[in-house]
Image (cartoon, rainbow, N blue to C red; front, top):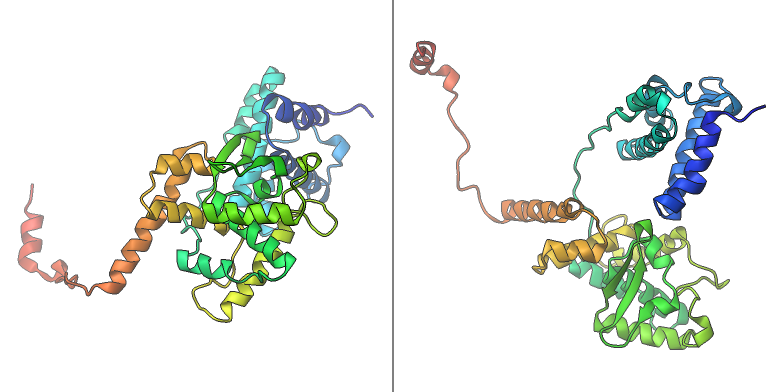
Amino acid sequence: MKPTDFAKHLTDFLSSYLPSQKNVSKNTIHSYRDTFKLLIRYCQETKNIPAERITMSVLSNGLLVEFLEWLEEERKCGISTRNQRLSAIHSFFRYVQAEEPTGLFHFQKVIAIPTKKVKKTMVEHLTPEAMKLLLEQPDKNCLKGRRNLTLMSVLYDTGARVQELIDITVRDVILESPAVIVLKGKGNKIRRVPLMKNTVSLLERYIVEHQLDKPWKNNYPLFSNSQHNKLTKEGIAYIISKYVAEAQKTSTMIPAKVKPHMFRHSKAMHLLQAGVNLIYIRDFLGHVDLKTTEIYARTDTETKRKALENIYPDLINSDLPDWNRDQALLSWLSELK
């Protein structure tokens, strides 16, 4: 059977356009790939359309809206996940409209499918005291405990995304003054993040102890598992959850669930609370748009507002009379021209 136009465009989009022309990261490509795996599965299971019969004309805006509803209702995906899948579809159809202009009207109807509004939530983060307590949990008297302490310290101190931490190699760690770590962010963007002196001391000991100071080990992962392979996101989450459970035994300041990404959020919030400019925090975190960073400022303002509400009594009495019962006022309002 002759390949469909959808099969051809999707292959070129994932294997050529995204990595070569857009220079997006492998994680982004995998996310887009997973979106289309789900779409093909939806067509097969719900619409009885075999994969080899899916064409660009089959993928109408109506079918794709139904697919997004299926994600929410059947797969119980959140609105953020739904919007992420829609973003991948939008990107694909923008690519195809340049490759196949004859279908421009059809493609633009798909591109016009709106994202859903997501309720703004507070950024989950730890207080400085809670972070300090968490970093006190690893056993410094054993090799693995010292490894985990160094790992969590680097994760917090650099504000790195978990994947960025996983991808750090020995050559990315520069401990001569001024000490920095080179992080490879989204879209393969590189940024150099400064290290504080305590983290530098931990890294110096860690590198020597694990014999990573040999020149031929420059490309080794900085943190590895017992098989000397890169750690996984699940592995890092497991390490953190273990120490969260320990800290919760002695304190109530640690939330019930601490995700690895909360280390990044916590660093950003602590920088903001220390008076660091949002522009610097944006560059530190590797954000492209300042609007992404402003979420921390909004969260900090809301946190302060709630603190003030708890500390100070209500000085302003909000108990006002019901003007609907004031007949004189009602008569005056009715006579207004």
